[in-house]
Amino acid sequence: MKGVYLVTDRQLCGSRGVEATVSEAVRGGAAWVQLREKTATTREFIKTALRLKTLLAPLRVPLLINDRVDVAQAAGADGVHLGQDDMPWAYARQILGPDAIIGLSVETWADVEAAQDQDIDYLGVSPIYATPTKTDTKAAWGLDGLSRIRSFSRHPLVAIGGIDADNAARVVHAGTDCIAVVSAICAAPDPFAATRKLCETIEIAIENRGTWSEI
Amino acid sequence: MKGVYLVTDRQLCGSRGVEATVSEAVRGGAAWVQLREKTATTREFIKTALRLKTLLAPLRVPLLINDRVDVAQAAGADGVHLGQDDMPWAYARQILGPDAIIGLSVETWADVEAAQDQDIDYLGVSPIYATPTKTDTKAAWGLDGLSRIRSFSRHPLVAIGGIDADNAARVVHAGTDCIAVVSAICAAPDPFAATRKLCETIEIAIENRGTWSEI
Figure 1: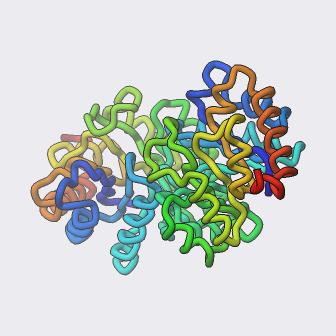
Figure 2: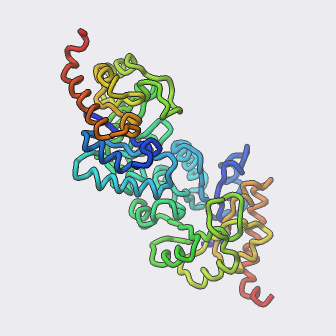
Figure 3: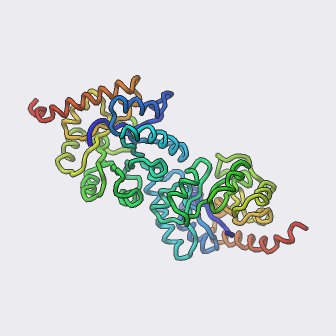
């Protein structure tokens, strides 16, 4: 698991819309897409998920659904991303089966410890930096928190929260596998170019990861 | 399918809470319970559903979940109630299987016609009367609308919207199978007594249904 992980935000995508933004982002190299809808009806949520699945399946880019296991099932998505207030992971695993991708947000050290025994596919380390797009989270992990989780955790890590092309290299250096972004792509004037820039930044950072600690 | 069908409303249940209200309502004779949560997190929704399932299963009172197929699966509920903005019924049937109870709200005549070919278990005729608890519905069906659906539809009918002990007999007479209520039980000072009164009213109305048209 590596690369740029896009989390959608309908409001930030604006008149361009979620599907066009996702289309541009995967053209720019996004390797994972999480559809997040906080105000849509279930029917609208499923419709968007079905359209994204049609777009992403031929590109072999996994589609994950935020929170809603039922939407993931209806749309044939590849999995779900669960927060600590969402369905407990074990129910989701039971419902979606062993092949589904299940990601779990960790917001406290207790969450990180609990996750080690859990049959989940990655940890969403949230938030790395304080961010205006999500106001219901706990204290920011910072790069030190991310490094500490990296040393401790057996799971791939997806870092999220306030990451952009300017700080992405530092976040990779701190040990994340994926860089998840919302605003840096959804609110970008050119989501294709923004994603491409992020991908390049991450690639270079990964290549240099061995030597960075000496800088 | 017949009797009193309770739809929960956390706000109307107030400090008594949803579980205590449901407990009193089934003691008073409620035959169906639909858990409806519009602001709860998924985790809270599942927790409440699990508690209600534990309460209702020994009494053989079916538990239906409003909108959320995933919550129904996690809690082992008996089925779902779907509105026209919720998951399309065919996806829900596919996910939940042939034994699940699936109810569908009909708000227009087109909904009623479309439902005739659908593998659903009842129609929620919504609203019968205008009501403050649900503001996103279309024009009220009234008793005439309900009678018209009764003549046309092959499905059992659950009438909902503004029904109480004073008008329940008229709604039964118009041809419904179940009387669904929100406020009339959730906001009642004594949900047990309120349910009991509704059940008695319905029983008498059903017995007299044959003779009522002459009154």
